[in-house]
Image 1 (spheres, rainbow, N blue to C red):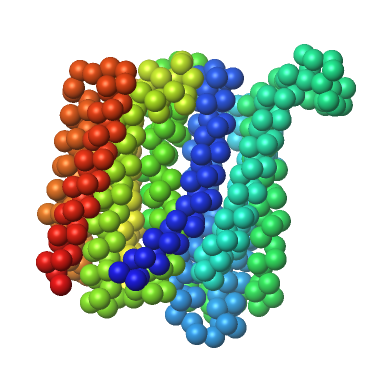
Image 2 (image 1 turned 30 degrees about the vertical axis):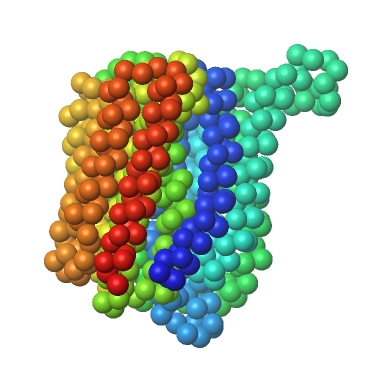
Length: 495
């Protein structure tokens, strides 16, 4: 239990930046869906989907490889050499990408039907480069158990991004219409309203550059340079993770990156549908806040503290059960108060509310898959992870091809859930075959069923207004009480 308390405390610390950061960013999300049209927000959704692909490719598994091999070394000099080699590896990859993307920006823009906006490609190339360069230094903060520094840098990055968004999208347009506004003449001399959503990307670029700048003091270990022997040792471990990450990102973003192609709709209508889907996807991503905070804490904790012993197996099973308990509770609250949660998006985007339960179910599976991934990471069998993710990618592509043309973005949501369910089942089957973990499947299914039952009670009961929200709150309380007393009872029996 002491280990679980440590994991929980670190998850809470990382969650400060993750949860607060996401909450602050969500202040922008309602703004976007009220300032921009469905089609304009569709452009934002599509471009950020491509960013996710490129981040996975350019980091090519080095983050997890750094964690794995650093945890095996006792000497600081050897750990620094691993850090330096991992950093320079992705730095070289990002430099090559940056040169190619900036010199061929017009061609890429033409291929993406943004021929009149080649600057989008240049801005995103720099955003991706800065984010890639920040990956290993951020991982080092986690590996060194420096959550306070991690939180500070992350929050500064987020606050600058929010501040610039508000400045460009709210203050500048207001200042142009108000002669007495502060710095009105200066703003008038350079601000161009026609840039529109481009200011979202400019704000992102500036904040990403600052984030990397703040991480520079943590690059002291790069004086070891790039070590070919270290690279040859960690690359076989990292490359399968590249396949895993690439296939995984297909599962997460293929639906948005290729929606316009698969939908068969005219360009303008397809962008509008994608904008609606992207907005409702954001609401469902509230669950990923907790998953992200948990992942930041769990990965270094598992590698450094748990290992692959029999005691480790019990610990991993316990962690999985508590993950399910918390994830189901968050999902139950979100779905029970969905009428409030959907107010985050502009009125034009709310017609997509029906996809949110589907996507939340997919996110529960996503977190469980992460928990099931430790057996092959700890045993240096990352090819199994790549196989699992590739199966998910095949399901994602096939399901989107079949469902999107007829069900539009609802088909995309079902395809996402289908892929994660397939990966979850395959992860469990392979894991139990090669590295058995005593997961309490009965308890996990029980908590999932309890959450589903309570949500159906809230959904199917014909109540409105205060009575409906009172019932929703009671459902969450009932779930928490049942789980609490059941866990107390199980713990007392195990003693």
